[in-house]
Length: 272
Image (cartoon, rainbow, N blue to C red; front, side, top):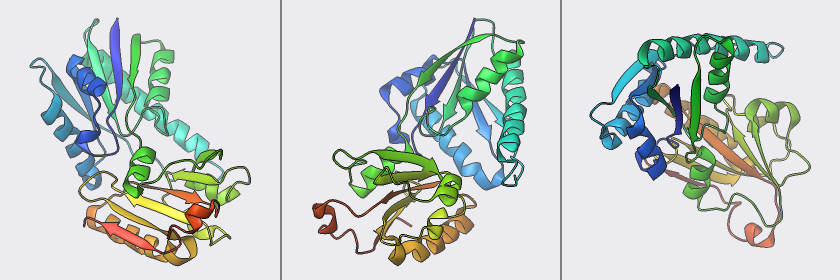
């Protein structure tokens, strides 16, 4: 039976690769490398850089494939648009597995961050299996997430003592605002800077883009003081590179040591 490895490769820094991930890369006969177009060619380049650096298996080969763009959904059709997009990708995965892997072959998909957190590779592979044309076993290798990298760059703990953490998306934050039952909220997949619509401007935001890479940018401060700066920095960075990967953490005013630590004073650190 074919085996497919779904490998978390971290938030963008090749040094995020774990020993387990490197071993998995070298186990694979075929490494499937997605191409998301000219605008995001840097992302494909980073995958190739990781392979160049860590793959020592002389029998390994790389197979590139194009990822279709997702149609722009309306608010009422978001799930159906994503479903159609995943179905298109499932067809591509199926063709790759059938044409590129022998019956007992091993292939690997390289996934940003961790395959279990806001990534759909595992769901798409399940779609492929349910089609019934090809069977395979799946093994998953966890990776360093953007959340871990964000907290490391800001030199902060993800959770406060005894306080829950909520991980959500920009779309949900925009629709629901800050939750009542969590003092810390991590927001991913926010292309529209949903934090601008929050009523509570005393929330502290810890924002980061290109985390863990030489181009990393991070901003922290009281939301009311830094939100415009983040929007401007984000737009400038995206225009310069053609793409951006960012995430942020929102925290309600809480423990005395946090209030006294200078978190309310806006700070920015950047390598660009």
